[in-house]
Image (cartoon, rainbow, N blue to C red; front, side, top):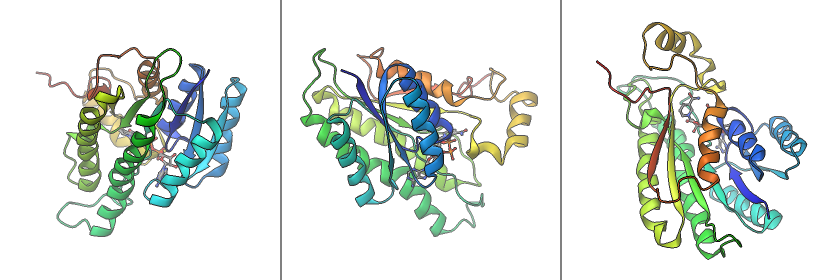
Length: 257
Ligand SMILES: NC(=O)c1ccc[n+]([C@@H]2O[C@H](COP(=O)([O-])OP(=O)(O)OC[C@H]3O[C@@H](n4cnc5c(N)ncnc54)[C@H](O)[C@@H]3O)[C@@H](O)[C@H]2O)c1
């Protein structure tokens, strides 16, 4: 029986990289997307070309009804879920100093990046607790894609940093609560990854990576760097770890002297 993964925001960027890595590793995948149906269809076609099943589901993770429908459609199509990857996220529309940034931006970013994932994980967890183990006895897993912004202060996007710090605690909470049900929860913290999200700040990050030495591994991260880490979790290579943070950041998190 194939394992089934659901990746939020799976139509592009890091989410797309995760979807394709999982498909290569033999998973069927639910590709959630917010608006760009063409991008989602393209990813679905790529998964199918690898001989796996893929289901595109439009759903806004910040909307409760959409989250419920996303899970309903997943179970209707596959009857089970082995891996939930909460990846969807947004940057603030405008980078604004925390002395001026407004509540509208805060509510949008927190709604999509933190509140939506928190309650999607809650709903999924309740279904996963009730789901019988597969014949190999493996239990489902949950992966949360946060960011190095969970612990790095950027004063021109405080809402984003707060949302990612909140995801770090979300990981701890669900890891602690779900361990008795055999469901491990992991946090992956990407560093600087080349996607649409970082497109607008390419020159700044080029300078930080290649000239200022902000991270020991001097290259941009790629979506498949994150995808590989997810595959390691999905294929049970960390069975005795939960609440674990995995940095995929070229070593950015280290202090060096
Ligand atoms: N790119 C980086 O350098 C970087 C670094 C650290 C963390 N991250 C995180 O990784 C995740 C993916 O980022 P990315 O760089 O691929 O960004 P991206 O903008 O390229 O892709 C974001 C994805 O999320 C989806 N999405 C946005 N709002 C949504 C909503 N309301 N409901 C459902 N889906 C929605 C989009 O459709 C898209 O598929 C985000 O959570 C981001 O914060 C990115």
